Amino acid sequence: MDKQNISTLNSSDSDMALEGGSQGARDPGRKSSWLTRLIPVAAVMALVTPALAGQSRTTHVIVDGHIIATGKFIAGADRFEAIKISHTVGHRTYLDWKYITANGKDTGGRHWGSSRVGHTEAWDHNFGKNRKVAFRICVQKDIAPDPCSDWEVGFAG
Image 1: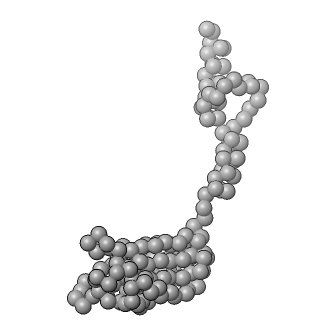
Image 2: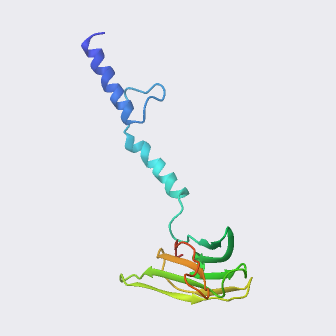
Image 3: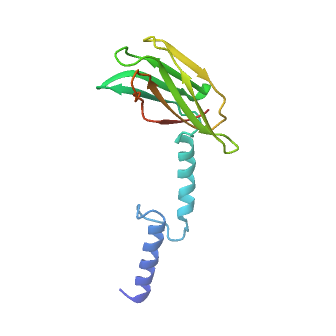
């Protein structure tokens, strides 16, 4: 093989590497770039990748392997819900929540739920679209500490 054929081969190899590798015969007269192949992929990913807005979440208080309370953030309604599942541990449920406002202020609060098993308490908010909201569910006991879930994060719708 002479020098001219080697340089053509090397040039062709580097073009194929930038274009995503060797995928069959390539028209040597056609110049395409990796960018022209990337644009359709990015467009498809934008269509199938869910946005952060509207991510609802659920979390549980678990004691001795049993769920005793459930807390939910329902993104489309900017609503929290708390439900006591079992009467074996504690009294009332409560849901702690926090988020950062549009002006950067850290804010939050506590909603007190019911001690009745199976009863759902709900609280509506208006956090603003795409606002990150953290919450946890707990069950009040006579002696601290109260059992609580881990903090869960959802995104307001």
